[in-house]
Amino acid sequence: MSFNAATRPTSRILFLAMFLYAVSLIKFFMRDPLGADVGPQGPIELGLLVMAGFTLLLAFWQRYWKLTVPPSAKAFVAFGALAVASSVFSYYPLLSFVKGMSFILVIGIAVVASSAFGSAQVIKYLYYSVCIILLVGLVTRLAGGGPLLDLDEYSGRMRFSFFALHPQLLADLSAITLLSSFLMSKRPPLYCQIFLFAVNIGAGSRTSSALLAVILLLFGLVSVRVTPRLVSLYCFLGSLAALVIWVGVQTQSHQFADIASPGQALYGDKMGDDLSTLNNRTDVWSAAAPLVSHSILLGYGLGGSRDVLLNNTSWRWEAGDTHNALFDLILGAGFPAALVYLLGWAWAAGRAWRTRGFLRVGALGIYAYIACFGIVSPNLTNLQGLGTFLIITIDAMVCAEYYAQRSRSSAHARVPVSEGFLENPART
Image (cartoon, rainbow, N blue to C red):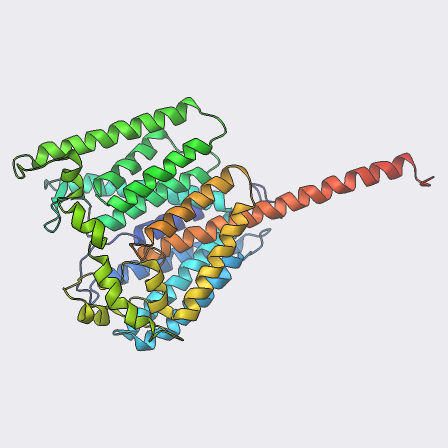
């Protein structure tokens, strides 16, 4: 079904909804991972998400648009429902129940926004909302008068973050936002891309930065033509990365006289140990593996296995999660639910593969980043389900393009028949 500007709900509704959703991604307060008191962070996240949902309800006042649920969204809803049911086994059932319902609400927001406004508009407004929030966070950090980079006591890394958002989450947020711009019909300004890349590098997530750099390079290699804008982007990004590394070296030279390489200032002094243990994640995975046998039908609810993980790891794992997307899905809702989720995503990736042009490249690029980064981070359910939100939005875009192509093909096939009939009505 095609739409024009007159039949779509006003874009201000979408911008407000996406801005509220983007703000809900940010952590403003720290809390004990096992504490029963979620503090103000929980109500803030839930309140913003509910406000985003109610804002989108205004779109139902408008006519001439149809609610279309992508196939991937149906699979993700089934996963969310089983996650809600699994919350009865959580160390904190109420918290896991709310997280499960919030996950389903995120799916609903993605479906309604994509149906009413189009996926391209959803990605556009979400992109600029995240950029605004990151800029506000940077200004707030600078205004606070403290150091821009914090020292990671474990690895010696200097990492940038703001509010209470973990640097790894900040790196993931900036990377996936930057990659989403390749699905926009009109690319954002170059300075926005450079800003997001700088935030990713400053956050000091080695995996995220490496994946982002590789995918951006692949984007350049598969481009139909090399434009001055693209060449400028890579030159600026490369120069910026070198500058960030150099600044990191200079700022730490008085504290670490034995720095052997520029990358050590930004990425720590335990590269060898971190590479062999994936920054001690193998210890957590070993602790999480036995829990899979207890998740054959249902899991522990979203975030509900924290106490078991903390009690089984050989050292205190304060994050309380598995740092792996697959383990997170299984422990959150059970093995069948995780399988349903992965099948839904696989079908979405298959549909994206059958498309052409920038849509195919952009969709597969984001999917590749989410899948690879998911090895070291539960990025499908954290950040208010941002990874899942983007998969649904992209799948909706792919499905809309498929139906548009099929309509064009049907119309093209009917034209020769009608013209032939007019030339020879008797078919003699």
